[in-house]
Length: 412
Ligand SMILES: Nc1ncnc2c1ncn2[C@@H]1O[C@H](COP(=O)(O)OP(=O)(O)OP(=O)(O)O)[C@@H](O)[C@H]1O
Ligand SMILES: [Zn+2]
Image (cartoon, rainbow, N blue to C red; front, side):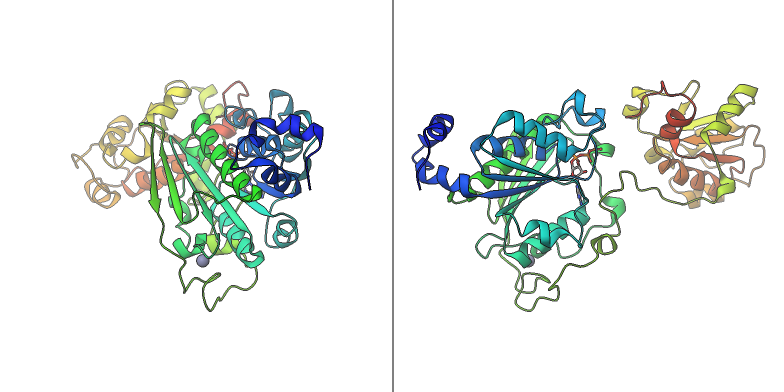
């Protein structure tokens, strides 16, 4: 097969590369690729794959574009806020090129649809942000014998590897069991710089383009580690395939997709894992707190977000003691509410409980606040264990405040 005049003109700068050449370009045209996730990684990955002349490109995302996505999800624009990410990405690709058939999959990828969707594509790009989908994609790719180009980025760090390539390891070979859900941080908690997802997403496109064109990938059985702060890139050799791997090993126990939400203890779609630590009597709504403010009742508003988040935006008169520092700074809270602190520096809830006599001397109630209402519940628990009796969580945190009380308060 050869290239048309239009194709030669359009892709000339890469056909000139002897490593790619006419044959590679024809291979790209005949190839297909699925990008799962049209977010920070998927945006650049999909754009470069389409621009390079991949014949059929699937873009899968269940979510809609939000304003806070645009700092890094560059396939979308301000006009697409509120629209489906997969369809917004498809539109961008239509504007970019008519040499690529782009298909939008506006679904949550799960065990019920993964095999059917993935089987239609040659190479799969994992541009998602959660552990459940990582295991799902890994297992589906092993079962269907597809190569998986996997990337991740958080804060100022990024990682990239190519799984299940010519007998190389899969994700499960390296990580047989998922991490505890509470130890996983995502971009909406930890932050991320757009250029970092851009670099890793471009690397994902590069590896996929090489695979689809018939070249060798650089990162099979190797892990790229980007430290964007120092600018350093390290490459680590990965362990070979694990013969005991549950999905790609010699005697696999996983021969069809499982329930990944149950396996990982975390959902693929929850943005904020809301922990139900407290019972309803220990919480008040944002609207009820607004009433307390209106009446002018004496109280302490304790904001337990970290300093950086507190500096972004805060409610008037809030006292900021980050959740992570609260055990050490309990004395300060006891002081504020008028309880004598007999403890000095407190290290744990247990020592705090011993040091303080229950509720004695508390003059003002405490209301505890954070961004989404998770850490604030833990803080209420800790304060209760320390003898502070009149303490309530503001349910749903500042998100609820912005939604229910003051829409001018920024949600970030
Ligand atoms: N199982 C899944 N099915 C479909 N889309 C998924 C699945 N898991 C993750 N995604 C998508 O992958 C993308 C990951 O990108 P990214 O983390 O940059 O975006 P985000 O979740 O919108 O970011 P933020 O955390 O700032 O809200 C998201 O658009 C998300 O909807
Ligand atoms: Zn494996």
